[in-house]
Picture 1 (cartoon, rainbow, N blue to C red):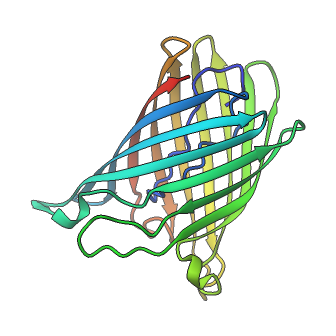
Picture 2: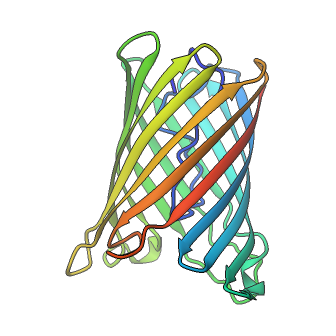
Length: 243
């Protein structure tokens, strides 16, 4: 979201990535930061539901340079009447750094650490890196975009790497902002190169200059998201404190 808006909208990834990248738009001004409490309710398949919480924070040390962290807290995974107890706990913390040039071009690196307190979980290191570009068409309408690569197993990049491309449009109306976005990922290693797209729509509202909220819905389409006959859905809610 452009700098004129107080509330920054997080990209609500359906896959549940713990990456720390905040969104496709420029960082906050130097010396400014934000803390976020994120709640997500997902329906990845029929009769299956998930609930997840995440605590996030970001801070701009100098103009254009932002560091961020995220702590995902899975709450529940339910299949019919069965609830998976090993889903609950503290999942992979993530750190991220973004640097933006004045012309609206930025670069990012995200890393989800191989730490998980849940029983039986021994995740690999996840890594994402790439470039972002943002521009304002008008005072109210802005575009953010991203092109990058990601891997859910940094130790085996030759067998696990995906191309990521996404974009989001934000339209500001006074203290509210409506946003619409899409992100696609293409598996570069698998023989059939499965492709999937996340589509999201939502709205953000600045209650005060310090406090903001946003609500979004994300839909997964394609083979890598849920298969031909399944459309995963995720509802996300964010509570932000700007400082």
